[in-house]
Length: 511
Image 1 (cartoon, rainbow, N blue to C red):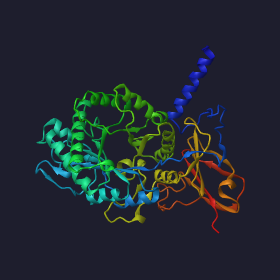
Image 2 (cartoon, rainbow, N blue to C red; image 1 turned 90 degrees about the vertical axis):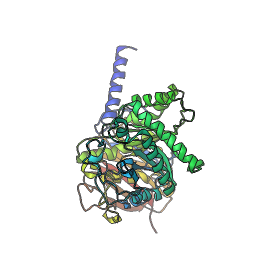
Image 3 (tube, helix red, strand yellow; image 1 turned 135 degrees about the vertical axis):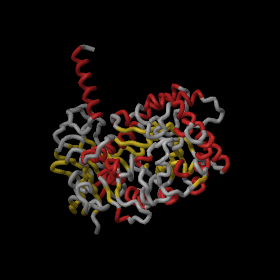
Image 4 (cartoon, one colour; image 1 turned 60 degrees about the vertical axis):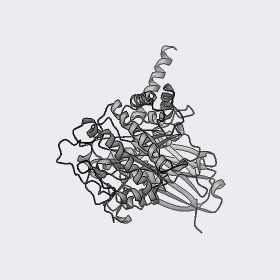
């Protein structure tokens, strides 16, 4: 390779990496066909009659938090606004269910009651972030169980206490708690299907464990799951599946260590049904291509490379402070990682963070906000920019329309035809600029007669509860017009903000 070609390759790689790290910036890049893309505007010529695949369910996997337990109505909001989820991830905190001082269980505990705040020897974990609520655990778990096909249950706490020996909590106690809780709640909510053993174990605010310390608990966890399956005589899809290591940070290094420890485990009935980890503020191309990388890593230890993969928490950006722009970075960024992961890592499920949280510490991730009382009403819940973005994305069903895109472009345009509607979305990762999308063959899908074209926006000025407290759950179109169906239709917008999202719905007009 001569020096000029080498320089060109270095420049191309640098631009690609910069775009992955900073997708809100605008870079002149090449499109998938190799031609130069005009980054001064977002433009596509789209033949809506040409489709590529069934549009995947990108918003079918949801996350909850009990740092401030969501009102039960959030489960209803999740199902009605975003469609019924395939899996919702819920939590069980063992030190809320069982008090080591009395060795008694309260299976329907009031979430967030800090019984240990004056006990110096008790590992604090995330207690300092958790808010006391009036939500009972049955209300929380049953609400999401009844409004989701399946539940993933993340079981944690007491690990550090058992390791340090400052409290009378042993490893045997921990397994007993894990098993007793899981068995009880599986009988209460039979669609508990997936169980994660612990959460982000290396972090101080959780287990603060070494890889080897975590694996001790993973082993206890898979033993407990096997015993519950056996005792309840669970078969087929009723069986509980167990997975880990639920790490965050240096994904490949930490997964490599976990796979090594699992491969060295000599137990004849050891179990790993799925692999789960978290990704925050990871370059988008790394997340999008992660499946192949992890499957190759499993091959290194002769493990089953066909196991399901879950990124059970994800946001493109993870900041310690809260700013309006961060909401929009995640609202727009999620569309990119969810979409391109579905292309390049099709057997990897992403569960974005999060439907509802303690707004004092994680507003920028929330999809919905409102009171968290047991009797909170639907109309009291408000939708945040990420919620609007996910509501748009949840509409995409049927067949995906072929559109020129690249992971390294500073825009993304997607489309689908669901049998009745043509849906198109444009997301801007560059600076403010105009949009012009020319659709052809519209009549071949919608026929002749009148059609209605509605345009929706989410940005700092539209459909945004953060800047307009009058915003409700209802998403209002910026414009809606009824016109004669035509072979070509141009969708235009004068200037879409950085990290702004445009969504068009085109359908036959009501007669």
